[in-house]
Image (cartoon, rainbow, N blue to C red; front, top):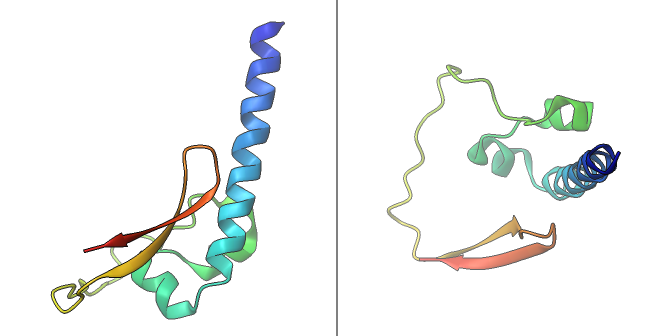
Length: 88
């Protein structure tokens, strides 16, 4: 019984984290989403369309990151909180 309750709460936590991440991703521009490999269409379908990635093999051009001196990256922390860090 304890194992079943644990799995239930883990599933609920995962769902909440994905909803939060989905909301953050939907606030980004189409270009930023595409650059990061996410599909807005899949994001709009909801959390059941996880992981929202652009299907491989769609002739994606590699990003040239050589000109970037530093940028802030938003991400999810281990406990689901939003974090930002400077990437050199």
